[in-house]
Amino acid sequence: MGNKGMQDRRSFLKGAGVAAATAATFALAGCAPAKESSGKDSTSASSTAWDEEFDVIVVGAGIAGLAAAVTVATEGDKATCLLIEKDTMPNGNSPFAFGTSIYAENAEDAKVYIDQLIGGTTPDDVIAAYCAGMTENLDWILKLGATESDLKITRPDPKVTMEYPELKNDDKIGKFSFSSKGETATHTQKFLEGIVEQHADTITYKTSTPLESLIQDPLTKAITGVTAKGKNYKAKKGIIMCCGGFESDPDMLVTFTGVEGVYPYAGRANTGDGHRACMKVGADMWHMSGGAQFWLACRDLENTKFISTVWNWSNKQHGITVGVNGRRFYQDWDGCALPTGYAEPDSDLTRNVGYRHGLTQFGGNWAHLPLPPHAWFLFDAKGLAEGALPAETSTDPVADGWALTANTIEELAATIEVPAEELTHTVEVWNDFCAGGEDKAFYRPAESLVSLSEPPYYAMRCVPAMLNTDGGPRRSAKAEILDPDGNPIAHLYSAGEFGSIWGHLYQGAGNISECMVFGRIAARNAIANEAIA
Image 1 (cartoon, rainbow, N blue to C red):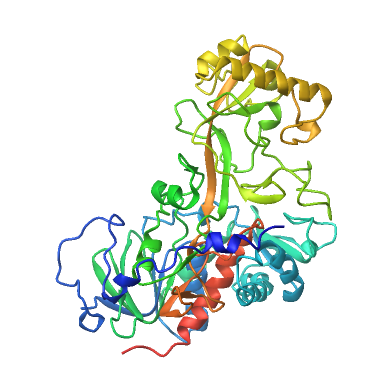
Image 2: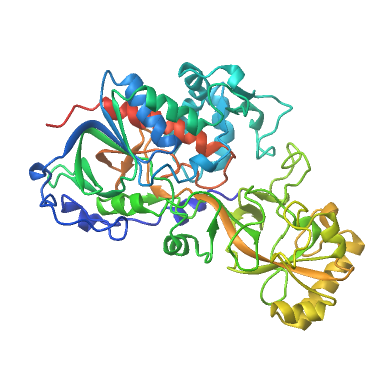
């Protein structure tokens, strides 16, 4: 699959912030409002004035942070936990995701499948820890109080394919999510929030409390606490970073993915604060170009809203996508290869097309494409009638600000300011492909070939969209955050999309699973530590 060579490309950030790691407290520029000097900023952890002390501190209250806090409360023998969230409520990806998690009944069977997805980018022991944790996911949720009637469970079944049915053992993976009719909760995030509330005696939950810095002992390099919203909090056993990605930081996106003008679908609080904090204490980074990204999504002409907030909704079978040069430039159909699934089981992954969480087949490999910041989706009167713009969104796309229109391709080219000769040629070639039943340029499936031949013609703005990034601090099988030499930074852990294990191909619902698996692993290792004085 060509994923072995991805490792070097995705683990390039060696030594970031090592020189800064000798300071005890590291300020985060731009991560939070500047606070007035309180005399608490210190160059030595031993001289830090602590406002409060806890056994474990969890940063971020998405599903990863909630899983970690709940594990401390339920398995920590009365260990105390501080859970801090930067926004007034969780505003990363967890609350906006479907909340579905994958799970396994046999870790070795699951590992065969997972190895084929990320084996070239993630160490074997980390994958093994993840797969072992997958076998616990469903039972853990049930043990916490959910019932099977609360859940929609898809058991591993040869008749049910996963996102990559071309790969061996895809039928050894199951899924579960909370039912919309469940009595306990309707979403994993809400369910775990309820468990946190039940353990208010050991979990202190603070919202509107952004992380400002990590506090590090200058001699041992152990992380001893955090500064958040102007206060210093001591962690006697460990800090667990569950800060999500950096999808709402445009500068980081351009730096690590090369794509400009990105609009994330989910929350807006994931701005890379935790990444910068961990760099400053000497963390290595990995998988920085990974994530559920990118595809060209339709927006209104003023670029203020998406047509749909369902990430995999596609209307591209009703037309074509062109760049500002008037040319098609990629396999511009966002759908899956089959109406009911991603591909035929055991088919050739290197030749299948379609989008799978932003990955597309490119030269036989599956990769994130460096999409342009602006493109146009074109369709005609027939395409409009068949659903290029959903009727529930608008019955008059021009009047409602969704599209521009013209009676000829040449006029449309002038309207959207692309070269008329290029656009005319592009449409002519496309119509020839449609007539012949074969996209000879980008191999779109025959059923998605719809000609542009019935005026008026329409153009809708497209921009690169995404769900989440996966890059962040390199993680061990024990959920420890590692330095560039592969050594753990003492008392510092991570879970979820913050330094995710997904380094190449991504299986849908794998991040939610990872949040729970490494939330538990991080918490269990933290509470096992000897408390620092």
